[in-house]
Length: 336
Image 1 (cartoon, one colour):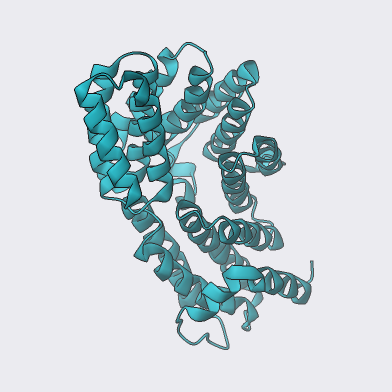
Image 2 (spheres, rainbow, N blue to C red; image 1 turned 90 degrees about the horizontal axis):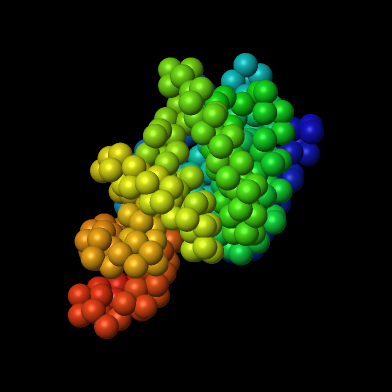
């Protein structure tokens, strides 16, 4: 695609609907006429910093407003003059930032904004043939579609992300197979889900951390076990034996550091929910109390949604006083 056509298309995408109002109403510094290497580095640094904040605090608070201001400035750079040697780095940096801002919008349930931002990130990556960042954008697009109740679309998007898998690293491949597994699990395709998890495990075992791009630094053992555990969780709720799901979710909870507070809260909440469903309310109460405390420190509507699911599953043990107390505290937390 020629650059002028790309800019017209992406400008139209950014100008559509509520996202345009958010971007134009968010203050941003003046965009320079000529892009310098330092400008690209600033976009990269913004993406790294905002991603860390999103993982630590959730995307539904001040993180999202800050992210939108950064994206408005970064997207403006695409209209500035940029020397050819720097162009691929610029588009890659903007793509990465757009995925971060889109993930923040997803966490805040601003789904239309997230959808546009993820598509914008894909366009930026494809414009400069950056297959890894294209894969990351498709991973998030898949996860959002599955989350919103359209796992068939989620599966399609994950498989689009795996196009030319030979150009993707083991971590990037593993990430996308997890997205496939989560979509397949929501569709009730047990054997295909297990096969996707097995393929993801094989890719994960091949990872050489020093050979991975910085955008995949988050994808460690905790992330892998959490993602695969989430897929197995859906199978377990549908009647598949829960042991593997419980093991993987426990590994994720034990392995996530404090800088990934939201991811740990997701896995801990899923773990407690599955323990409740598997008639182990005593252990579920301990995990549930910890999950409640962790989610209470976040601004994440997705984390609140997971907590509400725990409360619904805990209803089957409502005769236990401690479970009734947990459900009341959950209700109070998700209402704020």
